[in-house]
Length: 406
Image 1: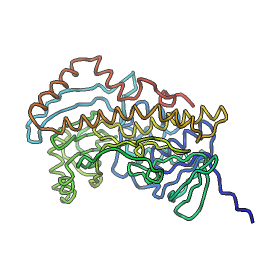
Image 2: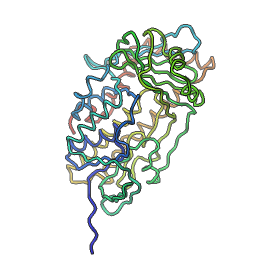
Image 3: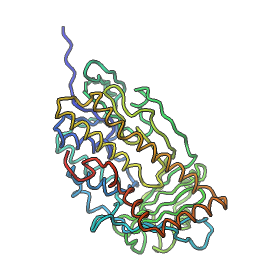
Image 4: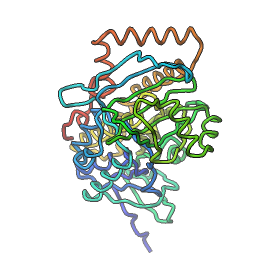
């Protein structure tokens, strides 16, 4: 008897986080493609985590039709202050301050809890007809004009393009045999949501301390998200402390200018490193987000790099679909890789260098970097360039990040 044909989808995305769901929405809205998102744990992964959503990414979320659902929980960044000090220093001198607007009524970034963005995208994707499956891809093989998938639930499917959005430890990247170059920092990023007595007025603060940066990111209300970098062994010891001792350690880094602190979520720690896939594409296969590249969180670029991957890949797929080319065509994937690999390599090297420079407590390094920060702070034109670069609105900006439809 003839074999029963496998279900066929235009694009299958492994990973139901912000990056994967954004790609699903872009392809549905841009070209009406059939899209499936596969994730064994579709909810509950983002508790206690928040991200900086740059202006370009905000424009993209608005164009995807989800910003109205996110906006009430989005805190605009009014300014950003950078300090460089030791934990024992009685005063933390602000070496550079960035104003938060790139245009009237347009901040360069918002701080938003990841769960808010994920839930808005998940609801919109469901309404747009994106199929979701709570399972995992356990194997795949290219055959003809598509990819045969074997899922953890025992089913088999077929897709014209398989996209891995399954994080830095991507199983699909390993299945595809794509090498990964990078290294571990022996640092952990500790995240939590903190409530405080006084308002933050939208001010974000980045304290560079010898073990690593401590970021204080404003959330809506009298709350802030922290991203606290510590050496791996010290992070494990901090997580073992009781709640009162944790708050004491937190106050030493957070400061007392916003009053008493209370933890809204438990501390959670994640290993930090830098790395990049040797290539971002394969045969009818593409990597996006942390599956393609991993950077230190000190600049808040990780999510925004992933969303830029989405904007570029979706634009390439939709443009070529109008010419009759399938999503997994080599021309589509080559265009995506050429546009993204050099950009992410450059930023990966830059953030790696910054982490090494600011995690060094030797006096010559401290004097050199503080002098450099002071010079930049006195050059408004250069500061404006840096802030617009961080906002993702300069250079070859993809259509979605200009707020334009595909």
